[in-house]
Image: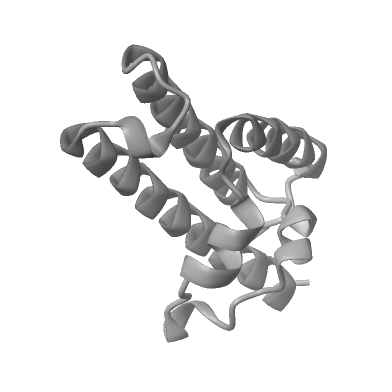
Amino acid sequence: MKYKTGLNKDIVLMYSEALDKATRLGINLKNIYENDVLVREEYGKKIDYAQILSADSSSSLNGFIGIINELKSIEMIMQLSNTKSYKELDEVDKDIIEQSLSLISSFFEHISKWVNIEQDNQ
C-alpha cells in the first residue's frame, strides 16, 4: 500500500494556517502536543513535534484539517462570547473549548500514528 502521496506541501501550509490561528487565539500547539498527546502503543512511539511536518499522507492531512476545524470552533466561541479571554467565558463555553482542545490532541495522535506508518513503509 502506498502511503506517501505528495501532500507534504499541503500539510505544511495547513500547519502554518493552524499555527497562525492558534497563536491569535493564545493557544500553543507545541505545548498541547508535548504535554497532552499520548500515543497508544499500537500506533508506535510518539514522534518529535518537528517530525509532524514530515507527514505526507492523506490521513495525516485529515488530521491537520481536524485541528484547523477545532481552532475555528474555538474562534467562533470566543467571537460569539465577545471576549478574548478564556477566563471570562461561562462554564458551557469553557467546556466546549476544552473538548475542542481534547480533539486537537486526538488529531495530533492521529498524525503521529500516520507518520509512524509512513516511516515503517519507506
